[in-house]
Image (tube, rainbow, N blue to C red; front, side, top):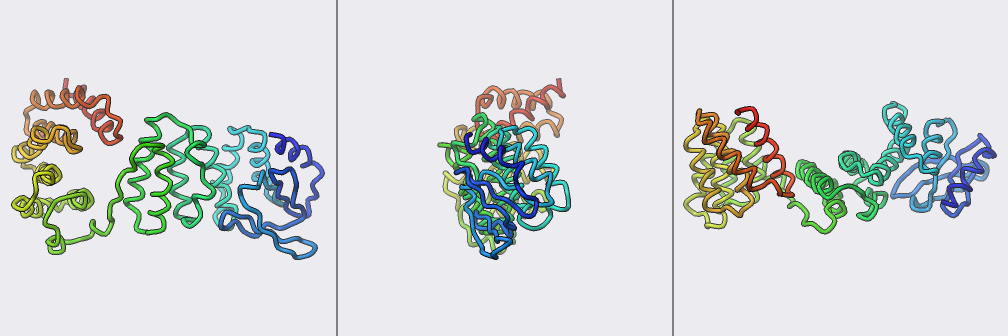
Length: 342
């Protein structure tokens, strides 16, 4: 905190003719123009001599920039640990078109990312890191909070990790996906990182799928998009083709997505049979909670409300203590549906 007191104490005497970079060593780089923020370093040029200097982000306490009063005030609030005021000012800057380009737009987002991490605002950490990963994928990790710096409950961090994994899996950029993958362990602490899915699989047509002789994680990428697009016949055909060659350990994925496609197609009885086979034959597997939930949905949509209630209750009783984000969502949806149908 010593450097912060020294910095704030000297702000009054700063000439307005240029920018100033205050260092954590309590030294200052004065009368410069900040040119860029790149590779986790500020690049400056001395207004008198024209000499250029690069300063690592990790060495910087705060900046003061000519003509940027809101940024300067935000930096001062950050230095004296008034995080509420700092966040409000940085967010005000984000809302202004003036931060749409140049180094300031990245600087403000980096400041907010680290503030959110220290405040335990995990959802905003995810949102801001994903945005920065798109802007500066090559060096975003070098200006991001470590696992030790990232606060939040275990549940919030796990939910955030799953959301970040979803964003990663949706990205078409290899660099962005790599940056997101490397940040995930910081959020999950010592928990396993959600698996990486290949976005190219989502665009394959049925003919190209013939190279797969086993269902697997690729099906988790391909099938949801087809069902969402209304191409349920393609999913049913693909799963039926694979059924004859599938090893037992790969059957849960096949049966689950076949059931989901049949449900979307309105074939409720066939869907329920597939989904309940997942639940009964593979109760400890990752597809069992979803099997229960969508089997209950099949029963509800076919008018068998009592059976649907029974399955929702079984889902709640079995998985209420789960720590998987997707399972937690299913349990909460089951609670809501059970209450609506009572």
